[in-house]
Each structure stands twice: as C-alpha cells, then as structure tokens.
Image (tube, rainbow, N blue to C red):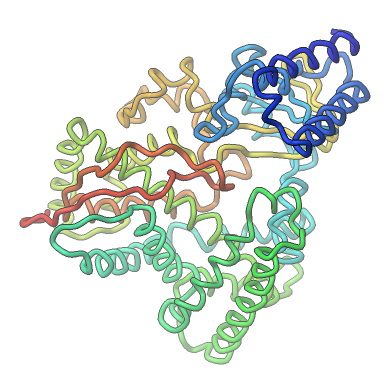
Amino acid sequence: MSHLNMIQTLLSEVLNFFTLSITTLTTSNIILLILVLLLTIICYTSYRKPFNAPPRFPILLSILRRKYDFINKGPLELIQDGYKSLGDIFRIQLFHQSVVFLIGPQAHKIFFESKDTQLSQREVYTFTIPVFGKNIVYDASPKIMQQQLKFMNKGLNLMNMKAHVGKIVMEAEEWFDKWPQTGQIDLIKEFSELIILTASRCLLGKEIRENVHQEFAHLYQQLSDGMSHLSFFFPNAPTNAHKKRNLARIKISNIFENIIKQRRINQNIEYDDFLQVLIDARYLDDSLPTDNEITGLLLAALFAGQHTSNITSTWMGLLLIKYKSEWMSKLLDEQKQIMYKYHGELSLDSLSEMNLLHAVMKETLRLYPPLVFLMRKVLEPISYNGYIISKGDIAVVSPSVAHRISDVFKNPNEFNPERFLGENAEDQIEKFSFIAFGGGRHSCLGERFAYLQVKTIWSILLRKFDFELCQEHPEPDYSTLVVGPKAPCMVKFKRKIDSL
C-alpha cells in the first residue's frame, strides 16, 4: 500500500469510527486525537523497513475496525489477530519502535536460543534499576550480570530447596490455623500476605521475618507500587509513587546493611537461607558483593517470585474450585496415597511425587501466565523463516498467546491438567511449547522454588478445607505489569472434620 493510500484509508477509518460520537468529544479530546493521528502518520510514512522485514500488522487500523476488549483481554486479542492473519512472525510499529512478535514453538526457538550478543534483556528491563539498584542484574555489565545470576541460582539449588520445605509448611500451617471453622476469604489477599511471609523466611532471612517483617512488608509494597506501566516507559518520572519507591529502597538497604553487618560479625552462626548464600558469594576476581548489591539481588529474587506465586496460587485455587467435580476427588486420592507413604510428612520427596498437583499448577500457568510478554532488544540482525529482524527492534514472545494455540495444545481454552501427564504430554512434543518460565539460558531461576511453594500451600489446603466459589470467575487484571485476577477473589471455606 502506498503512503497516500495508507493515509486515506487511515483517515477514512477514523472518520467512520467517530461519526456517531464526534459531537460528544471535547475540544481537548479532538486536539489530542489530531496530535496522535499526525504523529502516527509521520511515523508510518517516514519509517521504512527493509523489503525482507517481517510483515507489518496494521495495529491502528485493526483497532479502529474491531472493538477490542482491552479492559478484560488486554492486548492479547490484537496479538492473536496478528498471528492468525500473518503467521508466527510479524511486527507492529509503536511510533518509532518496531516490535517483532514471535509466536509458537519454532519461532520461540530463535528467541530463547539466541546469544546475549544477539538478543539482550538488559536494554528492555532498565525500568527495574530504581528498585534493584545500580550495577545489579540488568544494570550490570554482561560479565557481572552472569556472575550475579549464578549467585542466585546457587541460592535456589536443590540442597536449599530441601531446607525451604519445612519453613513453608510452618508458615502455611500457622497461617491457616488462624482461620475459623467456616467463613469467606479473598484468595488473592490471603496468598499475598502468606507468600511474603514464606518468602521472607526462605529468602530474606529470619531477622526480617521475626524482627522487622511489618516494616519491610510496608516498604516492599511501596517498591511494588513504584513499578507500573508508567514506570516501564518512564522509570524516573517525578511521580509520588516513584518518590515513595526511591525512599523505600534506601530504607530497605539500611535494614539489610545492619543484618549483613551482624552476620559477618557472628560468623560462628550457621544460616540456611538465600541471604547467606549471597553474603558468602565471591565474584571471579574474589571480590565480595557490596551490601547494596546483596540487597538488590534479594529484591530481584523476591520480585521474581512473590507476585507470580501469589497470582498463580490464586488462579490455581479458583480453577480447582470451579472444576472440583472433575478434579478434586483425583487430587485428594493422590494426597491420601502419598501422605500415607511418607507418614504424613510434606517434604521435597513427597511433593515431587504429587504429579497431578504439579500438572494442575502447570495447567494454571498455561492458562494464566503472570507475565504475558517476554522481551529482548535486538543487538544483531537475526534471520527467521526468510525474514530479517533488524538491529534495534524489540523481539517479543507471549506465553498468554502461545499457550492457546490449538495446533500445540488440544482444546486450548479448556482446563485439563492431564494434558501434561504421561509419555505424550503436550508440552513435550515440541520444545518451547510451554514458556511460562521462559526458556533457554535465561529461563526463570526460581521455577523450582515456585512449584515447591505453591504445591506445598495447596497440598495443605486440599487436605484441611473444602471450598466453594462466591462469585463469577474473574477476568485477568491487565492494569498491572504482572497480570493476576481482578480482585477480590472471594471463596467460601469450611474446615474438614477429618483432614488427611
């Protein structure tokens, strides 16, 4: 389409879109509309891509032609339309930035198997720097970043997982023992409060959990509030939320500096938490991580796990209660058999044998992944399927869209945990089909801890309580960077007389 034809089509669609409502627009709305249209037209006409660039999906025309439900569906319907009309690689133009979507297992392979010198995380996640800190993860050089990720991986290894199970069980049982015999709860609120306790106990250290938990939880909430959609584009915008975020980061750093100082003084005391792993870590030049770097890595681990585990626990509960007639008896049978085998003890070994519970969590993540987009900056041109993804583009994969491709997952909109069981598990047919935890060299370091934490909590709940829904199944909340269900998520509970 020529530029002139494109402009004529665009203006025609805009006029059609606003014909019925133009009289209700205020002067400021009309001015804003004209400015947006002019900027879009300038970008479309001045920005030329090579002839072998991925096909462009006309995002503005598509929005004007179809009424997308951005409130309840976010941008996913738009991306699904791009996939249906153009295939597993296409691009959209966001003003001056070309964004290339890679949808489906074959396209994912390019995304996850490319080297860091080709596709880089650092440039697209700079909005985390005010929270994590300078020279930490995405603000560090590639060499330092790799060493820091190794520190984090060591803190979340199998040996530490064994120690974490007992801590999670203790926190969860104490929390649920406070519930009455019957009542109503907001799942997302309950899990948010519980999981910050378990994360504090396992990751941040007992000093945080036992001495300053309330203060830390308040400061952590201010950090979270300072990571919004606005923060993604303008991380240092002079907003009240950002000011509180920056102050909270300073106060949290002071808290951990005091704890780290005391631990280094009292080296005869042994600790089995993530904090101690970072205190004992050494860079390749044998230097120690600074106190600020340790604090930033702790926050990075907490941000990676707390919101996502809270959200996944909530969705998992809502789905189990919604489909309890199909799955609850099977889950309880599994719990009964395995807990009998292990004499009632929840451990890494007993949890690892809860295959159906594991599949339920995985199916929950397939339907409702907390991160709907994963992004990389293109540093070197990459070829895929005859197209060239240019240097400077943003490459994107979408777990939310990929997990509902009918050619990959049979009846993709149905809740069916058994699709992940057996020799013919659907995610094993083709690599990178299931990408809730990413993939390749940068797959989520906290995957094992996430399964451990959520399965432990729901193993206890399934054996101690019966549940019923109090409301319709909620829609996802796309107003936040990490997408969970719209609150509240109310359910009824009743304590079992004879728990398993």
